[in-house]
Length: 514
Image 1 (cartoon, rainbow, N blue to C red):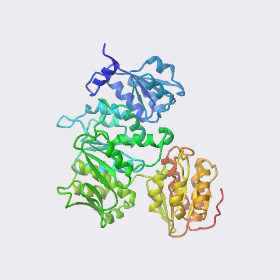
Image 2: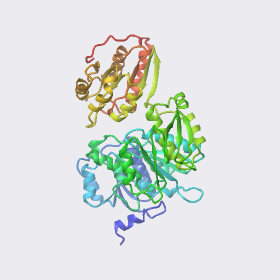
Image 3: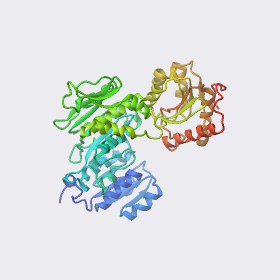
Image 4: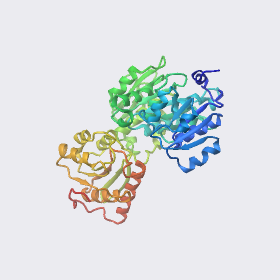
């Protein structure tokens, strides 16, 4: 009989024999269902274990030929233990300290994420030459989605069949099964997915064409257990990269990741930042985005990709967005995309909703929705772009210290409005580091009232020519289903106030809870 580990080593192709392999799938969101659906199609014996499951997915599990057990997951369900899985594929929401993950590892059962499974199955649809699509990896504390979308847009403009997938919302297993096929998949990776990917460096370990870690700041520490563990997970993005390891010159930690990475022989380190680029770097010279990495003579020449003035006309000139553009351009150029195609891509690119989105300008006030700024590092980028704004912040800080952002940027804002359940840290940070800034609070209002009250306070505090900036620096789950709903509520409240024609009254509020 073939030992389970030996069999797993052979499962590196869609055409391998996956039949009757006992696989337990943890979680039944979009990722979990894509895993179960894929494995069922391959003939594996699939048990899905989830604490709760959306009705649309729960109804489909038996249809695809899998089984579902909805049970509390604070202990190992009997169904899982009795199933004796050969492999467990966990959705990225399960942290390392989860009791089921600890049980799986203690039992010596193979533990995969969806990315490893997809890499093993990447040859389902191949290119004309018979090879599967190249993969490009994107991670970082902030800017992942924007950079992933930018890179995919540049690749398509350069004539390649490319698509963004992974943590961006399209499960990678759906992407590899798309019958149209792709030349390149641009895979956004969360630190959670990378932690799972780092568990095994065997046959299932991906070999990306190129990779980037955009930046690193404390985030998801409760999930990972420490800042060091979070950093180590992010560093997995560069493992085995074979063409380009793109790093942020302004973030020394990303450079160290590249220096320490076990890459494929011949992979190049390519730096980017907003300064003048040296050889093998991308940067900005006299308002021109310049590439000195992918040109014939990078010591004496550079390729022009775009100008800051052009980006300003597209609403893309904020410093952190320019940095994302340079990172994406490095990935696209590494894949052979010409500078002219990079420029064309930027002429049509739109930022994601809730990322530095101008909601309205009325009564001399600009209302900016950056609800996607779910951690302090992202909020600092927002405040750098709009330093004199009325700042709406707060929510769930996930164990992150808010004090340093107030120390760095809080003293510049016109006023601050605290929302969410974690208002005590905000209050303490402003009292210590920016006591001169008026601090308003929205008390524990219902979800439908939070943003209406915050917008009312902001309208009173802002002056003509001012900016109101929603950049929470916190997760949204205390009062909203997602950062998207939080941003939508903000936008609705802004528009309702403008429709009432009352955006020009200002300065009438005192810093107290409402």
